[in-house]
Amino acid sequence: MYVPKHFAHEERGDLIQLVREFNFGTLVSNVNGAPYATHLPFLISTDENGNLVLRGHVAKSNPHWKTLEQGTAMAVFQGPHAYISPTWYNTPGVPTWNYAAVHLSGVPQLVSDQEQLYNIVITLSEQHEAANPSPWIPDFPPDMLSAIVGFTMKVDTIEGKYKLSQNRSAADKIQVIRELRAPFGQAADENQSRIAAMMEAVDNNIL
Image 1: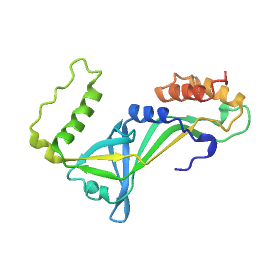
Image 2: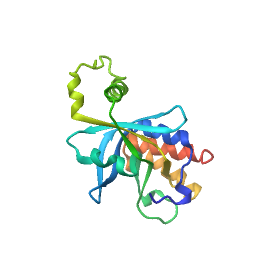
Image 3: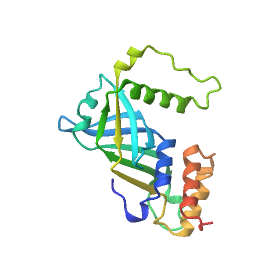
Image 4: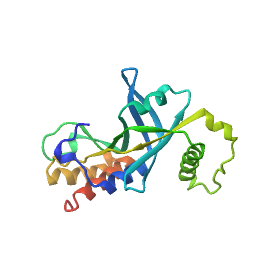
């Protein structure tokens, strides 16, 4: 992705945490000479050698899996994002969008072992049922696994972009943060509140 130097975010821990929190991403690779995308939840972990690994599964009826092992794929994750009005600046500007995104690239490998595939399904379920006071207990016929195809992807490159008004003056940043917390006199939504907090975090001397 296009990442101007002032928007590059290279703190590995931050990027991994964003993927964990916003784990519904987009897997993109080449199918029949054209880009192909599948939207799905991912698991991210570290293997015994310290490599980042993504795991997930797609429907067997989805042709995407048939070419996954043939080249590099990219998993795209979108974090918080918010519209920024030029009326929030003290100096001239134009409308823009602040956001955080992470791209992870590698060559996927299909999962042939049924126990590994089952583990992917169960781990995803446990992760997203964690806040449920009466969590779903895995109970499905084993042959249902034949309807999906699992994959793992060792991450070869990780790229992060935090576009958080780093190219604006300190006065503009302060004003944007204030406005994000009460945009146009309204209550801030979760995205706006998160972007305001992230702006403070990446420039902790701003206030």
